[in-house]
Length: 376
Image (tube, rainbow, N blue to C red; front, top):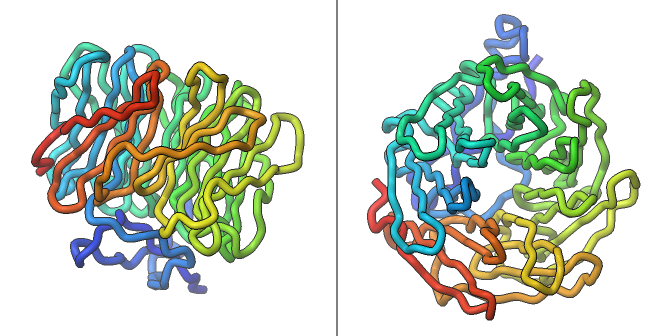
């Protein structure tokens, strides 16, 4: 029996990348499905971009960035907090990083996940203050059909990715070990985007675009096996990869909505209703947003980056204020994180493989830096 499969690839414009056919291989039953190969059009069409979206986090007080290069290599950049000097390192060779990466801090180190050759899933880690990167294979060929996303959950690392047949897969490993345990979060035909993951207290929270452009949520308490699914928003509501964060006892999700709106959903932990808000009713795009928690002195809240804008709201206010770091033309979706009380954004420039970084000060003024003039 054959199934229709969505193609997830990095968002490149101008013919750099084309959708790949997928081989449907169920976990533990590869032989039975090896012949089932079909191509279909993705149900949600986010804006195509010229370059792969950067990934950004804060580790040991410093902002760190991971990027997929034009040659499908993996590079890492870091900046000592308070300086504008960026240092770059090659993490993985050309031809080995086949998706947007994700990055996070984990104890005294930095961790990166990326789709590897033949739809595999690769993991890299480095101890703070060193330049040596270590590689692990999380899952082998024909297991991973989207960019992965990762988070530190308690004393372990959790990674989510779209699996065979539009399923949703989760892999975890206890800190200090290289043994990865797979779990099925959502079955076949449940997942139609790159999923998002975050820690929320002692739980892992996951969001993904579901069937018919719906928005799905899953959560699992650390150390337990059941995944609990919930519907955040129904059919016709979600038209991008979602982004998710845990925020002061609540789960927060953002995604592009109908008619190019930018939507936000939040749920208090331990409750079932999801509360929708519209950040912007007309952004002019369906680009993938990113989200971070923040504290600007006026209270805890979240900031969302999409395209050329950053929108922030204090918890409980539903009052979104927007700013733009500069008049720039991003060639990728924008990544956002917060370092101290400063919002940090990173993106590729539209017209060359230049990696840009912007940060705001306590007065809300933005400052721009070039991380790398030629990410090749």
